[in-house]
Length: 279
Image (cartoon, rainbow, N blue to C red; front, side, top):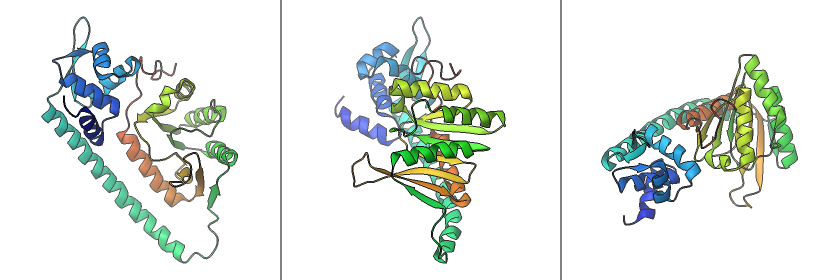
């Protein structure tokens, strides 16, 4: 197939991950492939191809063919592309709704800010990684009903994050909610994958996305901790904002839920064994 790189990039722009695009293009070339054959043809790691094929089937871009060894066939390109475009339109509609609601919520905050002559004492700017980690621990401890997180490397909390595990258990015992969306590439780190399993066992609901816009924690729709990476400085440089503002927190909670709705369910074996059952 000519211009494979171009086709991969086009499929990524339509919402597929790079691995999903590579495997779909491999499936197009033949009537069917087993998972192992698809991994070789697409040059995708064997341990990831099962999750990729599962994602393509869920997106209705591939069809499993039961047999002694399950094989997979690509859906016709015109139908697959129509389905991808439909998902993109739905995503844009959801983002439009979020944007409208965010505008309505932020307008009175902005108007109030024009007459606010006192310092913005509900915003704390943090640049020291130790201070950011301390605030992260604090927001976990303060969460009483709900803790929502967008998680992507690099992580400021200790790898084990025992405080976070205890916060999730405490929330679930009280009938509360703990949800997190992780980037799929974070699972390539064995230590992170183990930590995700520990949080799942404690009661955290998790989903996964190819990309996340930033790191974000929202507690009880009133407290916010988010990173603001410097677009000019070294990529390792970041500024975090700790905000106690219910209106803004409510808007960011809506943004989290929009990302949650579009994220993928936890991968099963062999991508991340035991994640679904918290092993």
